Length: 293
Length: 234
Image 1 (cartoon, rainbow over the protein chains, first blue to last red):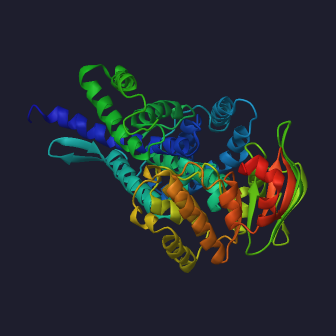
Image 2 (image 1 turned 45 degrees about the horizontal axis):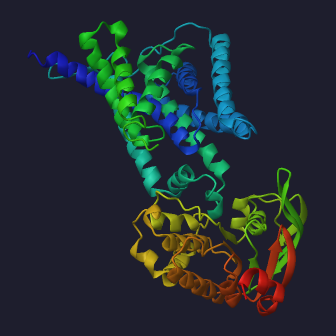
C-alpha cells in the first residue's frame, strides 16, 4: 500500500460514476440543444427505465445486460409518445410557450411519479443475483465494482456511437441542421416535427440505457429519478446546455469531484463539491465548458 | 405550372396580401416587383407553405398546395430561398449543400446536382469545409441558391437575392439566375432592383400594398410611365 492508494481508489470510482452521470445527462442535453426545451421529466424517464429493467427481469429472469436493448427500445417509443402527446402541443402555445413547456414536462414528472407510487408502491426494489452485481475488480489494490466498470464502458461506447451518428449519418446531419435553425429545415424538405420526435426518442433511449445500467447496482423506487436528475441538470449546465460532448466532459468532472469531496467531507455532504464547482463555472463561464450561448 | 388565385394572407389582423393572382409557366423567369412592404415576401412565403392563405387557392402542376406544409412543398419540387437566406451558419458549406439533397434516397440524385451547383458557383467548391457563417454576403447567397438547387426543384423562388451583396456580385447572381432557367428550372424572383430584374425576366407583376396593380411582359412594365416615375426614377 502506498499513500496514493486512497486517492487512486477515489479517482477510479469517480471516473466510472462520472461516465454513468454523462450517460444519464446526455439525453437531456440533446433534447435541449435540439429544441430549447428542458425536459423536467428526465429523472422520471430514468426511473421508468429502471422499473422496466426490474419488471422485465422478473418476467424473463434474463440478466439486465441482456435486457438493456429492450429497455432502450421501450424508452425510445416512450420518448416519441411524450413528444407527440405532450410537448408538441405545449410548443404550440400562443402565449409564453417557454413557460408552458416547463409546466408541461414538470406536470408530466409529477404524474409519472404519482403513477409509479400507485402501481409500483414506494418500496425499494433491487434486482438480485445479476451477473455483475456485487463483483469487484482488483486493479493493483484499487477496487472497482464490475457494474460501474460495465456502466462506464457502455457510456463510452454510447458516446462513440452518438459521435458517429451525428457526423456520419443523414439523420445526424438533419439533427444538427434542426439544432441550427429549426425553421430552415423545411427549405430542404425536412419535417422538423419528425426530427423533434426522433430526438425525444433518442434522448429517452439514452437515459433508458443509463437506467438499465443503474438498475444493476442501485435501489429502484419511485423517487430515484430526482437524485440523478439533479446531478444531470448540473452536468448539462456545466458542460454547456445542448452540448453533447460537453455532457461527457462534465459528467466525468462531476463524478470525480463528487468522489474527491468524500475524501475531505462526510459522505452526506458529497454533493457540496459538485454544486460549488457548478457555482464557480456559472460565475466564470455561464455558458458552460463547451457551451455556446 | 404555378397558379396563385385570389390569395389573401394576413398576419393577425394585418392583411399583407390581398386577392393576389399570379401565374408562372414552365421555363419562365417571372419577377414580382414593388416597394418595401408591398407583400412580395408574403407572396413567396404563402406559396412555399410558410404562411397559410386566408382565402384563395394555389396549385403547382395541377396539385393543390396551399394546405401543405413547407417541407411538403419542397418535396414536390418547389424550392424557396428566403430573403435572410436561412443557412445553417455553423455547419460547413458542404453540409449545407448536402442537406439540400437529404430527402433524395438515390446516390445519383444526391451527387448530380452538386456538380451543377459547382459549375454555377465555382467559389463554393473552394470553400467546402468552411462554416457557412464565414462566407461573404454574396457567397452566402450563392450557397443558399446552391442548397435550394440541391433539392432538385422544378420551380425556384428567390426572395431579394441581390440584398446585402457587393454590386460586382449582384451581376454574377443575376447571370446565375439566367443559367438556372436555361438548365430547365423555372424561376419566380422577388426584387427591389427593378431595372436589373426586368432585364432577365420574361414577365413581371407589380405589387402595391398587397395587391397586384400591374402585370405583363417585362418590356411593357418597363415602358409603363407610372412605373418609370415611381420606381425607375426616369
